[in-house]
Amino acid sequence: MERGVYIIFERKVFLIVVLALLAVVSVPVTVAFGTVYKPWEVLAGVLLGSSDVFQALVLRFRRALVALLVGALLGGAGVLTQASFRNQLASPFTLGISSASALGVAVALVLGVGGRGSSWFVSFSSPFVLALFAFAFSIVQTLLVLLLAWRAGLDPRALVLASISLNFMYQAVLYLVQYLVLNEVQLATVVFWTFGDLGRAGWQELGVLLFGTPVFALAYLVLHRDLDLLVLGDDVAETSGINPRRARLIAVMVAALGAALATSFVGILAFLCLLSPHVARLLIGGRHKYLVSGSMLIGALILVWADAVSRTVLSPVVLPVGITLSLTGAPLLIYLLTRGGGVGGYKG
Image 1 (cartoon, rainbow, N blue to C red):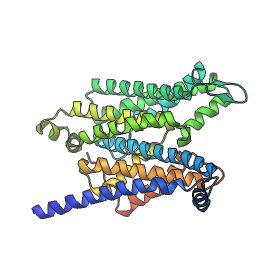
Image 2: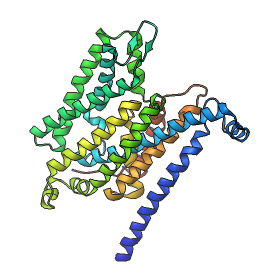
Image 3: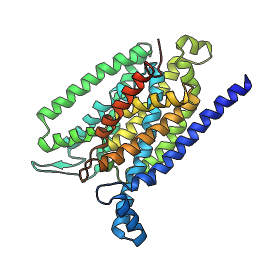
Image 4: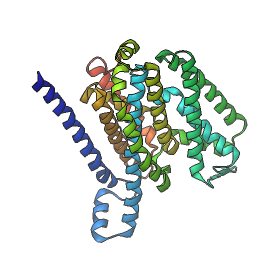
């Protein structure tokens, strides 16, 4: 019996190590792909010491690092949210983060603090402000959802109903601003922002992600025991010595903060939060001690390679990674659903 448990433990740890190595190796491999220089041209340029090739590689390396960090943030946030809601279709964006962040971008453009628009273009005086507004509105939305759900008992159903109602309200306000206030170019800017694009994250944004991702990763991992109990139901959690309302509140808040940080810099990549936990659960199992790490690494891998496909599939056009992610990820999720009659999820 003990030997069987030890073998399972070794297998899970081995898979996590393999995923970590694949994520690290994927960065330099995907950097070779892009619109300007093909892999063989990159190799020749490196050997000849071309400064143009070096500059292109630096920009691609930044995108790959952003993809790695954002993918890890969203992959881990998806696991926390699904466990808290006890719903395999839940994600941080169930809380309405996407509409709230888009409204934040629209408000920033209207106020002129993130950029000024004319009938022909939008010039960004401080692009970082757009991310700040998107993050702030996402947090306000999350706090409102949690406040309403808390008054209703903070069970999964209360969270879903509060999220849906406030999400519709944010959508209505966003549509009203788009219809009455924004000009054509500002409207196009908001719409493009919702596509999800890693190219808008500069060096400052990367610095914030390099600092924030390890902090959130640690927070995700610390909560693994509470998540194991939450998926078994509130009654089991209470008899095991934890307060399910408080544990759910903390888990949802941490997941929402991590997803809001990622979304504020690169736009909406909601599908990644849904896909990564399912793939990780099939590979590693449902124990959150390993599932959280596995989902973060799988999210990072998927986003790094989705960005590489975005840069090459219609070269010289660079597709927003959110479009590529949905087009490639949806068939994969359908395959997982049909492969075994369903994906690993929660009942009840």
